[in-house]
Length: 222
Image (cartoon, rainbow, N blue to C red; front, side, top):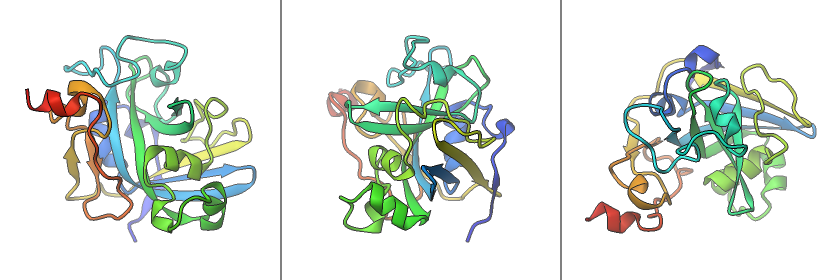
């Protein structure tokens, strides 16, 4: 078992592209309505906001600048940006970079390592434990965080927000042999090898399958 320690703001002040692979193997623990679940993170994606880094990211919610929806992405590192996808799924991102510089790392998949009964109660459709947090919508459901109730929750200090507590722990040493490639389901060029900003633990059964986003396959072969 890889040892972990509490994440610090200093671990997350770099741009998301640098922080993202460091989150592999990390643990996110949430306590919601008295039920605790811990997930070991196995797959992530980096997203940069406007003005973050040298390459503009057309796949980011913050590509056009601050809005009420993406405000958390511009805030302090270590808070969680919880957004609604397709009007249904609450997806969880770790905010990275200095405050005022937008960026986040989407937690795409993970392995439930504690609180399996609570996770199953939240995801009754999952037939096997592997699928409880396999994909960002499933991940959000399993850890019990909801847009907009828990958007902005502090995962470093464990401060309660609307009945939820979140804590992030990093591995003592960064994992070796991390894989990278295009982001999943992202439209256009942002979902191609021009942005190999998805990172995962090779061979882990909880990693979600790749699929092209709208127009991404065409953009990849232009």
